[in-house]
Length: 428
Length: 160
Image 1 (cartoon, rainbow over the protein chains, first blue to last red):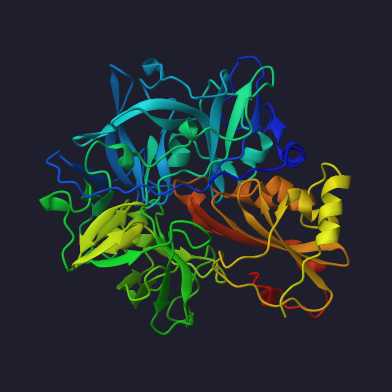
Image 2 (cartoon, helix red, strand yellow):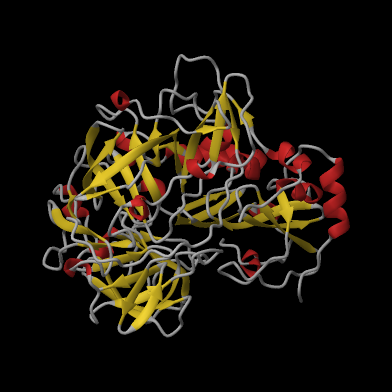
């Protein structure tokens, strides 16, 4: 559903800024004016069936130091994929598996990407569209292009919109883009060569901008074909979700040098991605303030935490302050630093189907020694989250020793003789 | 006590005053320029508590589909609570407080993963929090020195 705003209202609010901001693209092209567009945030759900498939559907996942050790390069899961025009493909390694975002982003300066000559997606006939991907304290600015994406034996059935971050074909980001914080669109900011957003929803949230040298930037609403989407839904097969399977690190409280797992595409489409009764399923709202959230309680803590989620792109456990502080001490950065392993247990409850619950358990430890040793995979690394938000952000540390299922909005599966429709998580 | 809507002020303000933006520290009557006034629906994670006498509350939906609840006293906005699918434009929302935010954020090390860690800023004139992930962000901001005497900020659902 698109909202229609009175015109006087729109024109008073849209930011039109060329240059400024600093950080991003920085080209020698004529000055372009980029106008923020109104991006729809609500879409009709389309059924994604669990049609049987025999397509190779598994991609190796590695957690390792990339591009270098230190500086926070830990708990980042990488896959390799291909970005293609009609005839040629570029293989992009070290793309971050991110179940907390939607759509594929690749740094524009990855070798070979520019030679593909990917077609830009325009607003109206002439104004190329850029996106300002927003994160909590950073942004990634760059153009939206049409590309075919391939991973494992899967490929998008037709080209999809992807973002090239730090794109030299666009001016520096507008002020309304940069205000969240730092430019993270490059190799060191991202901590990889791209971000593969494959969470439980389909559509990216923007904001998007239309850019031109003459300021004639076309319609005020972001065209639907420019909005980044979860690439999985465009696969010809195995397109209803994914399962990220990581090994247990329970014997390594100070972390491992690397970890290896597998990303399976599809749910209940093949023998290797079928949910048995050892999984707990957590349907989640698709829209509104509760989208992607479940509620959590933790034994011995006040709670509940109604804005909780799983996110492979969060490289720590982000947990509101736990009581008592003597058991869960924090350092000056707000990191949990108990000197002996502390395990916290609780329950996750679906916000859509109150009878669907999953047991939760995570551990916290001062892992300074492991970080100093150059380890990159930690199951017990955590830091504080805001208390009032009521949010457990169960990041990558939670994924070790688990199979985490992301059922995409509209995914339809049978689970324990019941039909479930995405979005949902399932945890084993 | 359910909060009451101040439709007259909201609508007149939208038409008359042009392009000013409601900001922290800005005028309550400019709040409507940030977006379309709405009734605060059950679509948010936390129900809003009752507002004490002397404090006004307005909830709006802005162009980025972010729900903003702005608290004001004596006509000046002293706190903002927000949630939405993407991040707000802090430059617009924080107004004269934006440099304080920018100063803190830009002195943090640029490490992979850090950009999606929850944000907590405690400055003498600005307390700001943000959490969540793409598609489902939430946060709050307020000026401790502008909070009406005797009012507990946490009673408004805002994190100190």
